[in-house]
Image (cartoon, rainbow, N blue to C red; front, side):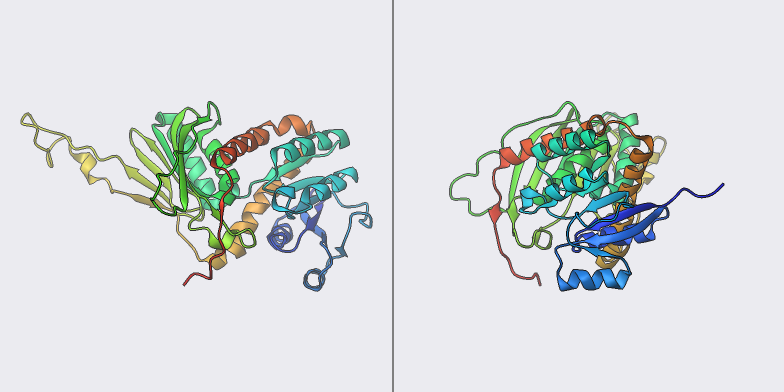
Length: 349
């Protein structure tokens, strides 16, 4: 039996799009059919280095492209990514679009995909990154056994959309969710890089801390940290220490007492004291391996989901209801927090 015909994929954008191109080149079942960008010398040179056609608009695209990855900023970030995604769908091309996308645009994109009979997926990227995926899988096993007692999460503001998706996948649901407005900062306390709010997510109490500063010209480089999540249950706390790992399990400290209320530190019933205070799952790599391995592999996983959707067919709008709910929650949080403080820091030491 012959292998299925590889999916011919166009990558749009050559900044973050380079990770998409690497994912397509490495992943079995895909062929990089070309690059589309605005036409800079660097983009043309990159296409030449890969030995693939280079395009500057959708009008000149060949008819044999099956899917496109749109790694171009959408209007929420001042780009034309959504217009490009719709132009590609008009040509019968399935689309995987990189986040963030405004809720209204996402809704319209899914409706557009339905009208054109194609598949459209929004890629929040980070739930596919291997350490995050390990956390999600461990969290699902944990909440199947014990009731979640709390969620404590922290994120830079520009990665809040993926955080909501990570939490939803980890808990196995988004609902019920509701949030309170962040408490106003007391006068005279001075500048604060973080804003905090409380709420309920998937029925569990949530504390959310957001690094609420942004350099609009260099978003990723000046985040004080990336995703950090702690899920607490009766048995302990499962922690994602960083977007790129590791995952930690910290059993809950509980010491028995004797009739005089003194700690029982040895003897029968003290086996729990032999547990490690924290177990580390997975290892951390270098930033270079994040870019060379983790991110392309994560994008490959998102591509596989798009390919499965293409194979199954069906209504893109109906399939996108979870994505819409994630986007709706993110929109709610962003509205409560308000615009971030604009900062332009120098290179960290």
